[in-house]
Image (tube, chains in turn purple, green, brown, orange):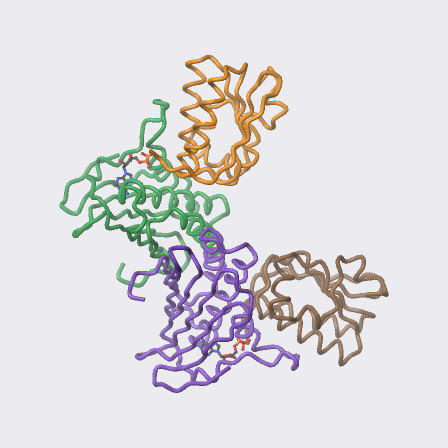
Length: 162
Length: 162
Length: 117
Length: 117
Ligand SMILES: Nc1ncnc2c1ncn2[C@@H]1O[C@H](COP(=O)(O)OP(=O)(O)O)[C@@H](O)[C@H]1O
Ligand SMILES: Nc1ncnc2c1ncn2[C@@H]1O[C@H](COP(=O)(O)OP(=O)(O)O)[C@@H](O)[C@H]1O
């Protein structure tokens, strides 16, 4: 985890950059070996996560900073997936508050987190020690199930299951 | 110049990432206000500059680090262009060695730097204090002339005109 | 109040149906414009409302949420809502969100306008 | 020795002309494969060599450089070289590099094969 990321993007919390970052994530995911369909899903999930930081973390201020880091996961020398980390310096919320909504309940809102969990194998929201939030997502090659793993612990040790 | 960049990308010197970064630069350039044609040219120039770092700076090693930073230039409150900085920790070369070739002389090689100069308004190669090179490029909105401004000074004060 | 993004939403009337056709990327900034166009279209009490998504290049969740809201208005006002002409990319977003079964989705505008849809 | 990238180069013979058609992105990794295909095509002494670029999605300078080299072989061997079917994006790269005037460029394969080109 202390190795440098394969690729990292630092952006201001300006929605104008979402589309470019989405395409970067999409193309890079393809290049390293994700099938096209999975690559678009990964890009969509990252897009939603970044939009959430802009909207909920920075309350739509455009001068906040966001860090996106992508690490290759290699197993037995072969590419096996991505670990994607998004950090901000915005408002801290209790990770248990970040929940996807029940789909039976048809109403707007809560779709972003739902999509992130559908796409990723692991989704972990944490408060950063200092300020802001950290979202760690793992997407394994070939997996197409929704996130099941552990979820939502914060650095202070509290935890929950989404 | 000490303000954080609007968007920054850190990547390893792996050509697999070129295509994603190119598209990021292309889309972001459009979103901030460059016409489509100029946006593709900016993306092409950045692509060539990154490929040069991989090929000449890191001699095609894929584990080097490259930093790309993009700053908006605003004049009288309106967006007027980009300052784009690329830094590496690779081989240092005398900036005067980085030259575009004479087009009358039809042969392969030297096209990348030529394209960078065609596209950008200012192109400056420098040795970084510590290790590696720094390339600073300015592209102004609406300009479509080739780079004319000062070029190729290194930090030790030497200079040249390409 | 959400600022409105630079999105074009074409609204037409075809045989008593209101056809609302947004163009481009429908994200956080653009969704309010689509939302307003949909609300105004419902207000005119059409026989059905067709959201023609053929011009949508990208749909993020605020766009989805806007369509979910339109579905609620549709149920409340008993005005059938039909989505049509989703690109592969847009359809994928509906599928990931598991919303493709909740909406009536037609292949193209023609079938969206036919009484069977 | 440059490693070869994953690029497909289709080579056909049409009426004595060799048609070399690379597909995809022609960058640093892919250029050597194109270079070899062009050299082999020249070796078979065709009446003309057509580089059909219709399948090229992106051309970076190593691709350009390879074509410049082909132009030199073309001059040396007196084998006409015609490029054809450049997409807007690929054409732009030639124009930025000011190479569009150096090559014979035809609209499509048909006109590239016609004796006038
Ligand atoms: N990065 C974040 N920082 C703070 N709160 C967040 C963040 N991401 C999500 N949330 C919270 O989780 C909720 C659900 O998010 P989401 O599913 O994207 O729906 P929406 O953004 O439409 O409300 C948000 O309303 C917000 O309260
Ligand atoms: N980032 C860099 N670090 C070191 N040398 C460089 C760099 N960029 C360019 N050069 C030098 O400038 C020359 C011209 O570069 P370029 O125009 O891209 O052509 P090519 O890469 O085909 O040689 C290179 O051959 C190299 O010697």
